[in-house]
Picture 1 (cartoon, rainbow, N blue to C red):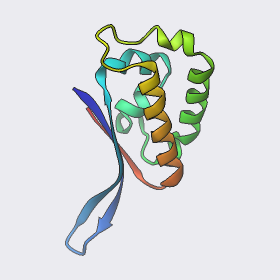
Picture 2 (tube, rainbow, N blue to C red):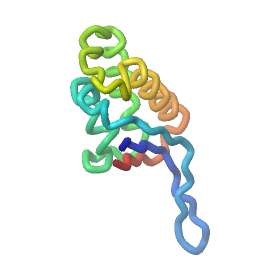
Picture 3 (tube, rainbow, N blue to C red):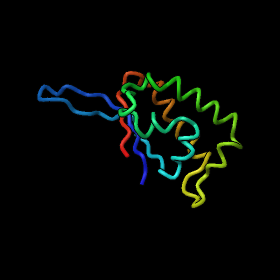
Amino acid sequence: MSLCFSLYFNIDTGNGYLNHDVFEISITHNLVEMAQAASLYDMLWRPNQNCYIYASEITPLLKQQLTHMIDNKEYYSQFNPENGWGSYSDFIYKVNRIYNACLKYPNALIEGDV
């Protein structure tokens, strides 16, 4: 299983609204422990339950935690899954992609589908 994190816009079609995805990425659930240690779990896995609605709301937090993770590689690497599915490097790469997408689409809506 994995998290499917996406950014989207609601498009008014005249007959209702249609979700238009502008960014989507999957992150293995094997990285939940690392995400929790980095205070990223709530904003990525459960954004709507934690009142995060727009990409711009999580952008500063993503930058802060991403910098912290990069500066503390040894600490976060201890949360690498034993089964080899997912890693510190994978997580950094994906969080960086999410951060850049949030910068590009600050008004996009967030969805974390577990």
